[in-house]
Amino acid sequence: MPTPPRTPRPPRTPGTAGRPPVPRRGGPAPARRPRRRPRWGMRTATALSVVVLAAAGIGHAVVTGLDTGITRVDPFKDMKNRPQAGTGMNVLVVGTDGRDRITPEEKGKYRLGGAPCHCTDTVLLVHISEDRDRASVVSLPRDSYAELPEHTDQNSGEKHRAHPVKLNAAYAEGGPALTVRTVEAMTRVKIDHYLEVDFTSFMRTVDAVGGVQICTPKPVKDAYTGLDLAAGTHELDGGQALQYVRSRHIDGAADIGRMQRQQRFLAALVDRLTSGGVLFNPVRFREVATTLLGSVRADEGFGTDQLLALSKAMRGFTPASSEFVSVPVGDVDFPVKGIGSTVKWDAARAQRLFAAVREDRPLAAPRSAAAPERKPRAVVVDVAPEDIRVQVYNGTRTNGLGRKADDALRGAGFDTTRQPQTASGPERARTLVEYDPGWDRSARSVAAALPGAELKAVPGRGGTLRVTVGADFRGVTAVRTEAAPARGPFEAVTGDQVVCP
Image (cartoon, rainbow, N blue to C red):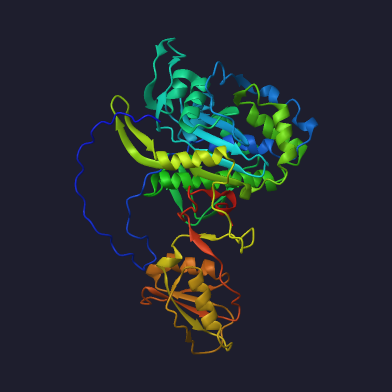
């Protein structure tokens, strides 16, 4: 990409240096200034579901005729000097604002006020591998700095020379065709198909599949979207799902937290589609597909033949087959004269990411060759194990059980004393976790790692939790926080890493 003109940024107010110590209490750690990440849009789950539905083992009789409800567009008209085709299939998925088609009651209930705009708030590049065993979803921030190629404005008819804009302006000025041209110029990835979805698609499709299961270890509430979920597992309908993926005022994580919630939602949707009988029940599949495709715009080349070809190839698609990543960003607040604040990509890392897409390489970190292909899922907890101090006691007459439990807890990330003791009193049948009431959230994290353990509040216990191992001890379950970092060079995660355990 060309180097854009940069507007000088006003001087920043100096802050205090140093990093505060991490407390051992069960309460939240001192607030850290979150690193802003690109925003995922509101309709990403529906967008991906188009591809996933197409990838199921569906017969020709069921698929035939489904494409008749799709509104057609021509995003490739008169395109020249396109990138060379890579391996696999690339679908550009665009999420648009369709609140004008939602009822007044839904607008009020799900906080969807305001006038609709002819714009995009989601741009996704979905890559289907050549062997049809993997789907890679790359989020392109809508505020990304971009340079529109020379074009004619679709609204005014005015001819424009190449000029800098935010990425979502490509749709406003030139619709699908200009959006495809701009994305291809930025990524050097050739787009094979174009899909466009909106609010209506999202809500109706989630309802058609019977809702999606989401779990949260703590209450989540956002006054802006109306989201209000207690801690636990929830079945979200279409409207609630829309609130969930839009929310960014839940905690200090802002867009980072929203991106993680959207990843979990996408993975949960794939899980519901592939394990809930939707894809292999012709009646349910046709209902879901008709609901979705009836409010989708796509290129002429995306039709029955493409749906059938994918269905034959991707019969084993699961959440583990999907991976999610956002374009590496170098500056989340890059000011440009006449445009405002934009998101500037990390050019070198972004180039490596899109090279991997062109070459059909996985974006997530490979699994260890020595480990099983499917590792046990970690239970999501509120406090990270490394922030919890634990003293282990052996409450049985089994020699070495205290040491075994200490080693297992430390292996799971807990900060154990490494000096297990022998408990006094009668032998315990059930493992006991004792904690000061001020460390109750930490205690719940320990209990999650020790399924079946008894919790007991002991005022004055202090910051070190006491675990007395009982005869029921069978090992330690892996735990992690919601903000567990992604692995690999592109910080990608696979769907099975983020769905509910």
